[in-house]
Length: 331
Ligand SMILES: Cc1ncc(COP(=O)(O)O)c(C=O)c1O
Image (cartoon, rainbow, N blue to C red):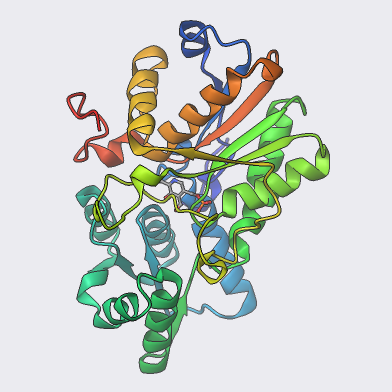
């Protein structure tokens, strides 16, 4: 018998798929292998860190029966945590950015989690205004406020929690290494907290220092600026270069990557729309961004014959209310 007893046992060991039809269509002479993180029990790469951060806190005595798990997140971590909290019997509360798709709020609520929009929490808004948009500082203030007012709280904080990159070092990296028999030349990952690229990247570099690590950040047209304060953004993906050091999550190892690659949201949309038609996978915006980056890297003459592995963080089903699959939207 092979019967699982909790969703925790369903996390990880996600498949690697070669985009055979897409490669042919683009006459690519390098292989693009995608790691389909939507095979996790709640359809994103964040299921890995959700489980790992909760179990790490349990081990350290920071989380005990009767406690409430609290987090601030753009969505997927909230969903993963809500499910893990439900399955382990904890209460869960999450503060979510206002521009996140409606589906994510509903999913967290379905797991019994409480959702609060960041705009409804005055301390976040105050700090964001006072610091000209320093998100890390705003979350730190919120954390202080929650911890000073309430007891029996475990504040997860994925952007500073070492269990985040650690689980990618322990699972994502080894899975890629084993599934390719060590024949991976280039590793491509988006950066949000930096957990994926830092943890899996560290493992792969230790196995073979010649593996090239590519870290993706949003291009200039996909970030808010004075001219366009609310652009279409790549959900969960944030800049790590060209911004003040204190705004980079401590989970991001800025020494790990060999190349920084910028993608625009519309390029991500086009890649995601295309691969749905060529290879039948429905993926989210940051996954499209990873495929776009992998494609451009595959086209370089020096990469002929190489194997590129790209992490696809989540499912396209989470974006049906956005412009991702609205073919009329073209930037
Ligand atoms: C949809 C999505 N893609 C990519 C990422 C980036 O992953 P990481 O936080 O491991 O850098 C995130 C994380 O927030 C995400 O939610």
